[in-house]
Length: 319
Image 1 (tube, rainbow, N blue to C red):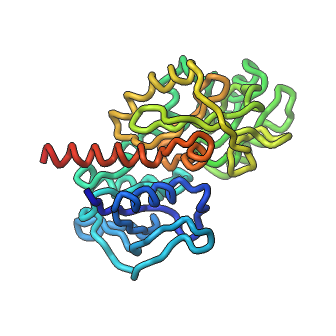
Image 2: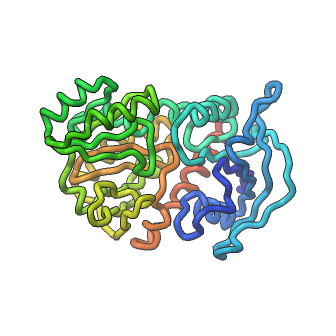
């Protein structure tokens, strides 16, 4: 069945053809006969009872430098679409949260992926707190004394913004590092939000594994190896992706969290695992499916669309 699909995303003309997950999902949608409409989050609005977007029909192709063609600008009622993708990049701020409130008004009659209610209520660095046996020692705090006490207990720690992304603002703090107080003061001037501190896992130098889950089931994984002298493995800051499989421990982690993700409509999720410890559950705009396809030949985009089409068929059957 051909679906009308709207992509709420950052400007499609600027994406990486060989790296962007939303682009790959769009290519797969076209291959299945689905039509694509794209708008940016700032062009989403509520208008007298209707949730609308202002954007353009698009056609994608894997031709670097010529990867998209646009139709004319037009205003659409998003309730008239079969699927809306919530795919803009974080930060997970109030602008992002507001888009989830608006899209929640058309879901599930229009299937919003991932479910916007639970995208809002499953922040990546907070959801892991529901699985303390799977995660390294963790603290969420704004109080500098609490964070200092956490460092005194665990030695080397990682400190980062609670709602950050892409490796921005991530610091490795040693037990004798004199800059902790200054760092906490700096964060306090930027934001009133708490920070997250986690015990540093030295095995991160061998890689931070991104595992892709589709409708609660693991599709595969890539390893992200930090650059020399770097504590962060994010590909945005120079982490090197490499081929890797799943361990038994990682399958246990997926089995533990998968039913919750499936129940809450989180069809496309990327979790981060270091040395067998779950550090993040990414539901806002996970990445990694193009690397997974190159390394292992696993077409995660096809698996994701299979799951979406199943849900649409189930909705049609119960209508």
